[in-house]
Length: 326
Image (cartoon, rainbow, N blue to C red):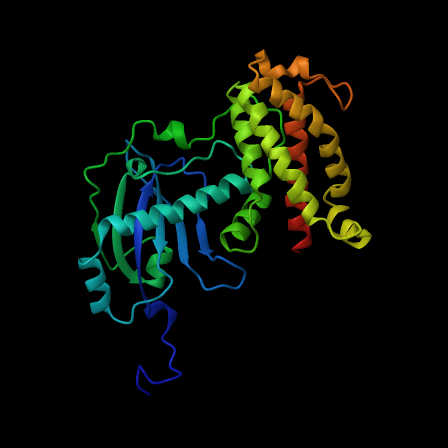
């Protein structure tokens, strides 16, 4: 039977793929693995992202290699070679960086980590393009490749500072690595979407960690405005008991159902709004003392407490989604 006859399926190891590969800082906050990026559940793969860790040298003990692979194979070596020779470097690199940026944004949401930031061309230690078999791509290797020059861009001296999660004295609970990896895969695979309130809450947390209580108060008001709409929209009509018991009971036995958490956020919203208004008027410390507690007495200022309760609700939502997926 001829190789191009209808119904013929070539062995996976013989298929050829093209990719752009970025050598990133060791602090890149996504673990090794393979991710298929889709825009919707069951949709066609848009890109395949493979992250590997390799030994480095005395100056760079560990290297992180990120391969952005076109999931559509090329039928012949000659076409792969032509792709490499005629590559539009600027467009190819911009496309690869956009894919990595999408992955980092997803990781930021999945891990609820406000200190995950984009990777830039200047952060990369090297950029290569090449082609090879599926097995080679999975290992971050090529049959043939070339190094790409981007207008003499050099690795930035502040890479570690920008990409490392800052070890700040935070009291909030961390999302587990298992929950984070599951959510990351779901986000990249198009099986779920990040809520607007998740990103806004991360911005508020970032400002609060930096000690900017006024800006955190303003961001938190926006986060609450989004959360009250988005979380309410996810509750089933009539607050279904079956939904609550199956998806929420195990995940939130200590913190209440999502309906109860949403009610708590609604009660806190007035204090959040008051703190934001005080911040906009220039009141010191975001008006934490002036805003008072409409929801009752608390030991923390309104911004810190209300942000913590919103983060708890979002963690519970993520845990319930993970629980319901099994």
